[in-house]
Image (cartoon, rainbow, N blue to C red; front, side, top):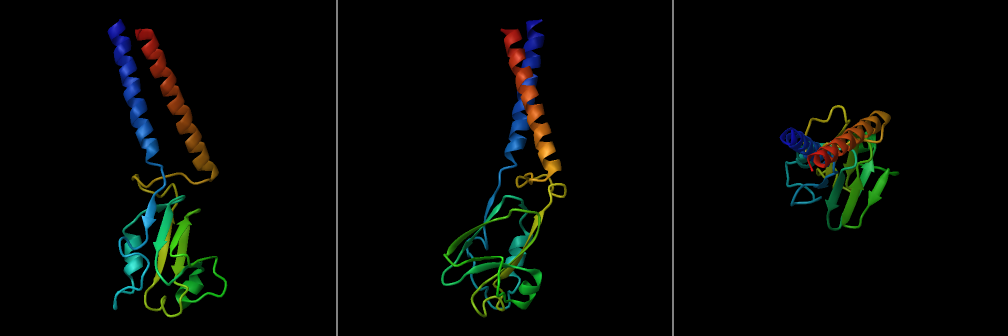
Amino acid sequence: MASFFQSFSTCFLLVFIFTSLHFLTGISVEFDVGGNTGWVIPPSKNDDLYNDWASKNRFKVNDTLIFTYKKDSVMEVTKEEYEKCRSLHPMFFSNNGNTIYALDRSGLFYFISGVSGHCERGLKMIIKVLDVESTPQSANQTANTSSPAKSAAATYFGTSMMMVILAVLGVIIVV
């Protein structure tokens, strides 16, 4: 009988560990924009450098972008301003050389350089932040602050707690 409870306890402990590891995949990720190159004017004839870089990544709510640059700036702008490569009133502006930008919602984010002529030379980027529902299972997945996500998080937390309680009970019964 003790062997049954020990197996039962071990099984629940393994399930708990597995689900806990899945929960850890919800941690946000920091992305260095442009990789090792940073936020710089692309080489000639490579206007899509940053959009190509962005398309190779999966962004989710609460991830952060790190823009590293010298003698430049970064602005979040509207789609229209992105297409015109200029903005009089950007939604976000920074020129400190090491800008950290939090992706706080799903949808499209438009970034351009604030230095005259740099956007026209390719220093611009569109980031697509996926909805929780459309995010494929990956190391970059996390929940946003909408009600369904909160419900899912609460369900996960409740399930995890139930598994902990059952695992502890299994250990106590075995002892």
